Image (cartoon, rainbow over all chains, first blue to last red; front, top):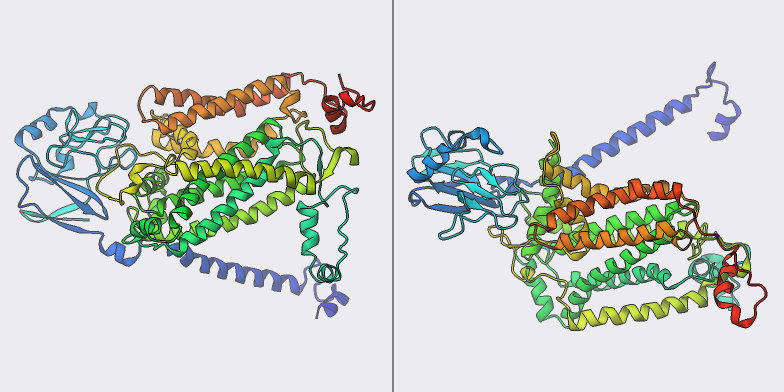
Length: 188
Length: 430
């Protein structure tokens, strides 16, 4: 075939030197290229969270045992989740702050569900480098603003878990959640 | 691939002649690391570290493959199997300590190898490709070391994985999907552990492949030497074997003594006690630090504490950390001085020492808690690091007046060592 092609190379190509073989070349390489990309996609996608990991992507939390002033530490998407029932004093402290003065301006209302202002649900993941802040456990250091304190690099969060001092750029993240009853929430 | 006066491979034994006809592998080895590779006669002991890095890789592969025989890459059992290797497996403690400390020694010799190259201008034409491939090896080493450190699934493993993959989370928009993709979950877990194990096993062999390219690229112009003057004739070189196999063998002995001292008398000196606590996603160690060989880069990462316009400080730190290594890829074109060796560059030499001190300071700050005065020192040292490569080196190349170069390698050697013999050939360049 090749020798035939060479001997009459100018034959069927006509005016601008384009041969039929050029078309076959481009078509074959393109086909293989598209096929290659199609194979790469699952090779990359297999690294994304698998179905069993995603199946654990929502968590139900029972609030009935949490007294005002207490907090519990549980897990959501295999990361720590803090659920705290604020006292009236803590709510007042959080409301006293002018949000405009904050690094990541948010009010306590914006960080809680309407009418359930005493329930503060946040991730227990410091927004600096991902450490677990102290303050959810009984007797742990809650930092100078009475919320959470990250021992890694000294970020202090206030009673609404807003960043007040230290290197963290953001408030502790509030995950998406909803009340399924008066004493239970579904996170995620 | 070699100088015309290189010794030729001439197998005498009929079997070797037969092999040479069918598959000239012994010939390849002879020409690469045998008598067939002519090397400048004046290499000093700083030229040992390439071979020592190769030796360190071999130690890592041997001990690593053995460790893999006793390891369970599953988050439920990983920590236990590593402890079992330490306590129950015959000589398991030796394999694990050799592997952990071997990583440190690999980085020690590679850092010496890199700073050797920086001092003697080994990155300059015609050896740019050697330098670039070396940096690729360095990046692969860092990835391999990081993933290996996660495998024992201790507290430092877990939180190191979290912080380092969190760096990618700092990238706007695509950051979080990338982080989740890297981890195979929302936090380090079984999926992360398994893929890190798989890649930790694979990458050393990729490194071995790039090392072959690194040596291939080196052998095209031939090795550099402490004078930086190119080889001019047969009198400037000696065959690699036996001259440098012997010299490297001596270096390997010293290396193994130092390695053994740490391995047998202080195997946990460079480790962190926290990594003997099993990974716990609900509790963070008080002081998260990477292994010592990442400290300079960790210090650059943490040096950024203030947002710059719309770029958050965290992202700036991540960009700076990656830039500090990527910058080195441009070094052959940043240092435009035609003189290679620091021996004949008085100004360059001083700044080389300052750079060495600067990296040491960064290393110290990277291992220290993120508090003052270390943050401020890291900021100054990080700024200097970038200034060295981007400002100081190009300026030195422009304004420095180099010392007169020797006419040839042989002339330089005889100027130092030939005088007592009354060598008449020795004519110092001065």
